[in-house]
Length: 60
Image: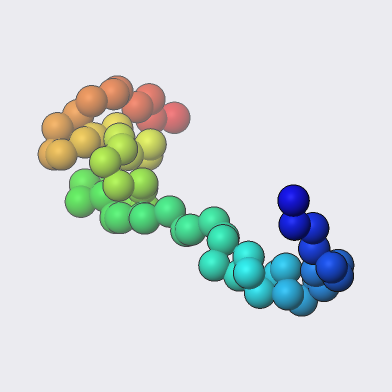
């Protein structure tokens, strides 16, 4: 069974892993209140999704 002859250096290892990273979430603005929300999710500030109220948010 083949075995590596030399230790893989940190730079070589990190170059190989350069494309493996976390992606930023896709944010959109809510058409009702203008807050930034995740795509295809209910807005946490006004409680609407696709133009209709899904959850009632209490106003303090």
